[in-house]
Image 1: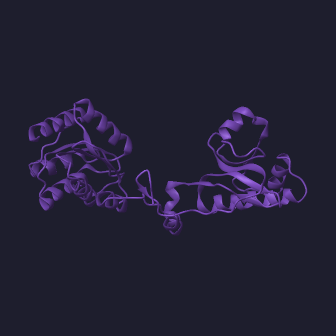
Image 2 (image 1 turned 30 degrees about the vertical axis):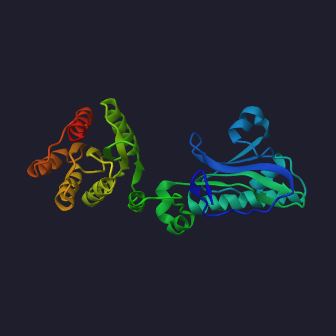
Image 3 (image 1 turned 135 degrees about the vertical axis):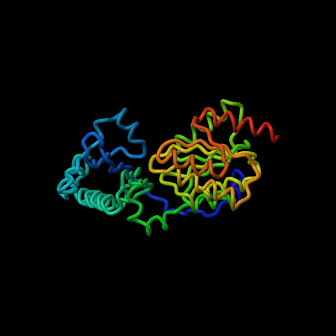
Length: 304
């Protein structure tokens, strides 16, 4: 089966719920207060932003003291403030406390259950869920990452390789491969190429702290795309060292036999050392992004 020319890999079958009420339950970080905030509303099923604009009085909040955590009495207070009574108070309070335990255990930045369903037979069930985990804490949750990992429905060999190496990789319809460090710099590089009349074939973000081996692999992946007629490498050295980038470029040219023009622009950490390595290898480099973008477009026109 295919939908919009994409293969259907699984069908999700869910219980049909006999709904008595839709509720909102969420926990996120309030940057201004520097605390977690637990949010609940008896009016679920709509975005919290819409609810805040249309019915702000229905949003109940409790800030969590960092050294105490979210307490059972606070969970009960929330359930009461949301208009629940009887056994529903303890059931909803228990749900909020379980949600808080998940936040604590998995370094969650944001979780939303919307809607949380109260069924006619008195059950509270999460009909939808959203969970954002702090990227900087992922190393603590490798088992969870494996369980939650979702590969794109279809990946070609280049996309698969880039994904395995942890590189952001997007194929476009041009002929200039742009290899950079940082999504912002990569986007700016694509814009600079377009400004000078060129078209990018590849968005490849090496990420921060790329070493020589990673740079070499990035170039190898970019060259796998048959549309590529030239490579533009644009590096802003911070935690990424320019000398490591230069070593990777030299190794790639030596071992891969690169037969397309390469334009390199590097500034930042160990810039002079990197330029020396490129000079010794006979590889030219430029100092500004504008010059580099203009040069790579010019080279593509020459080989086209």
